[in-house]
Image (cartoon, rainbow, N blue to C red):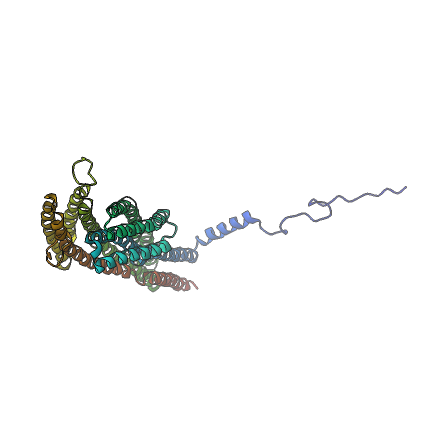
Length: 465
């Protein structure tokens, strides 16, 4: 019987060749080792060293350009948000608060006039409510992912119709001469004071916080860019010094051109950012801070006027915490104290005559308002309501009412706010303009600098051929 033998299977497995690289081909570790070895060998010759130096210096210049583009782009985006998004949204939130407070004031003024409610007072109330509703829609569209802003906008949207319903019930009862109208109005005012205005205040604070965050981001120092630029300049200086020591040639045109491009980019970054920081700081200290103080002062004036009206409407029906004093008269005094403090601070912040003049006018109006309010309050406390009423709301025979003084204060504060808003916009746009062209310019200078390094090193290498 014949005996057959079977050849052993290949090492790579049954029926197939052994896995692995072709004979003579280096593995991954071998390729890395060979690359390192070649680099080490190149470093032993002057042309090899020059190539390594050129690659490293050109790379540092490109890194400087890339980091500058990245950092400046972020600051430009934040500055654009300050000018075109966060500040307008903060201003809109303040306008919502002011519109609600003004509507509350107008409703109480109209209520005091009874069936003879002046048409302009009613129109003022309707304009305020329409403005607040429109601004709420805009705020909801721009709230983004800000949960706090969305929560307050939702609350305002729910409570605003309830408030207007109470006001209409108060007006309807008041036209019929029913005392229940005063209760409806007081309840509406309580809802405004405890729900609507606090929600509007929180919305304003949230939007102002976002504005300050954008402002801080726009003003933050580009430390990585400055560090990369200084490092690139140091490398260029070292490369030129090395070239000079080995050739006795004072200048290498390529390296000099690269140094000039890098220096221009670094100076542009430092000076442009310094100008931007200064302008944005001015926008904040001389614009936004003044806007906030003036907004708070105007709101205090509106609340004081509403409480002054409610003092006459309630006629002692609502007592303060001491169970003796009229609540609304106590609140009026607190509002006027806040108004005085706000105007004093606004006058200190005002940096020019156009800013100081309306604030000074408002302060004069407040002093007059206090005197007229005290006279009206004295008349009311004597029990002469009919004589006190025109001293507060005015009529054809009483042009010197406390309401007229309030109108002077409110109009002066509106002018002051318009001036400070213009100052903020001017300074913020100036800060944004300081970044103009910096992103594109930095990228172009970095590419040009890296190319100049390679050309300069290439010229030096040509001497070895």
